[in-house]
Length: 87
Image 1 (cartoon, rainbow, N blue to C red):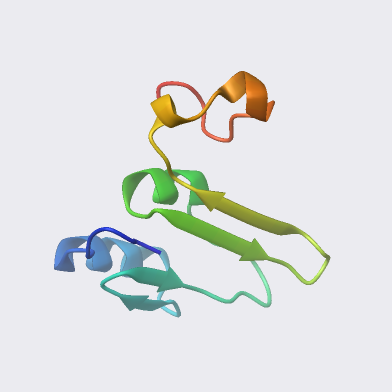
Image 2: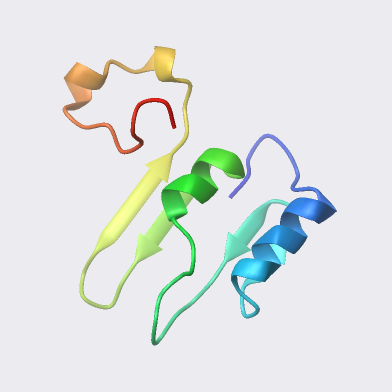
């Protein structure tokens, strides 16, 4: 989900190239897979296009990620850093 901006037509076309089955609109990319997986790295999509990411699987894996400016978080306090430094 893109919160503070709308995806451009070019960005939506790029996302369409990743998945022909996805529901794509100016603020979001939503895809359901029953077999296989997304042909892209969700971390890179979050970094480039979106502000929030949700993943839920049928084998009880759940991921919720939001993009925030790095200077607002103390990574040592969090104990993890999902995106690699410099990404």
